[in-house]
Length: 362
Image: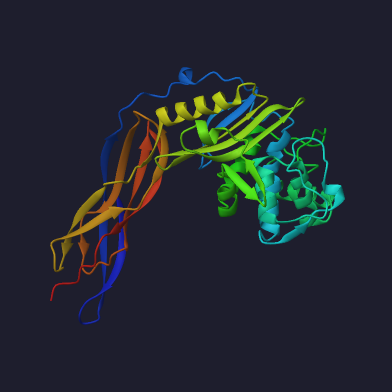
C-alpha cells in the first residue's frame, strides 16, 4: 500500500492536503505465435556474427567479441567520420596520390573534382579505396590524422575491441574490429540521415558514370535498408546490414562468412518470425473516482513502453493507482505508474497520466 500527499486550491484559495492510497492492480496480455527456442536458431557459415535489435538487444551471437580483420566494412567508420566533420557539398580535387590504390575502386583520375557526397556514394556503393583516401585527406589532411579521428569515434561509441589504421580496410595487424563493435557502429550510422540515404541507394551517377551498389541484400532481402560489404583473402567475406519490417529494425554482422548473403537472410527471417516489438502499454486505460469534480471519474492512460520479446510471451502489468482523487485534474498530470513484467522479470516502468482536464464542480 502506498500513499501520496497532494495539495490543491479550493475556490476560496485555502490549501487542503489530501492523502490518496494506491492500489496494485494486475493485467495480463498474451501474444500467441511460435516460441523462439535456442535450438531454433539458424546455422550459418560465418565464423563470427551478431544480430541485434536497433535498441542494442542481442538476439544472436557467435564469437561476436573475437577480433578479426574487417576489410571494407571499415568504410562505415570512414563514412560517419566524414559526415560529422565535412559538408556533403564540399568540393574535393582529386590528387594523383588518391588514384590507383590497391583493391576496389571508384576509378578516380587526378585533376577531377567531386563533391563529398559523390565520393561517399563511391565509398559505400562500390567500395572505392580511392574514394576513401580522397575523403580522408580532405577531412584530416593525411590518412594518419584521419585514422586518429576514426579511433576517437570508436572510443566514443564504446567499440572496445576495435582499432583503425586506415580509411579503406586493407589488411593490417593493427586494423581490426569485432562483430559486436561493428553492430554498434552500424546502429549509430543509421541515425544519420545522409548515411541512411546513401547506403540505401541501388545506383548512383556521377557525370557519365553509373555505380551499382555491391550490397545484393537490397535486392534479395525483404526490408533491407543498407549496409556495407567487404572482402580480402585474409579477412574473408564480411558483411554488415540493416533490415526493417513492420517498423522493427535489426542489424546483422557476419565476418569470414562464405555464404554471407544467405546468413543474413536466415538470421533476419528467424528474428522477425520469433520476436515481436510491442507496446506493452498499448490499450491500457483506467478510471478512478473523482471527488468534487464536474465528472464522477477521471480517465487515466499509460505512456508508451516499447519492448522486444519472444513471441508467445505473457506480459503482466501491475498498476499503482489512487483509490480516488479530488478535482481538479489536468491532462498530462502524473497519476501513478505501471510496472511491466515478463516471465516474472521486471522489464521496466511507465508513467500513468490523466487523459483530460476536469474542473472542480461549481
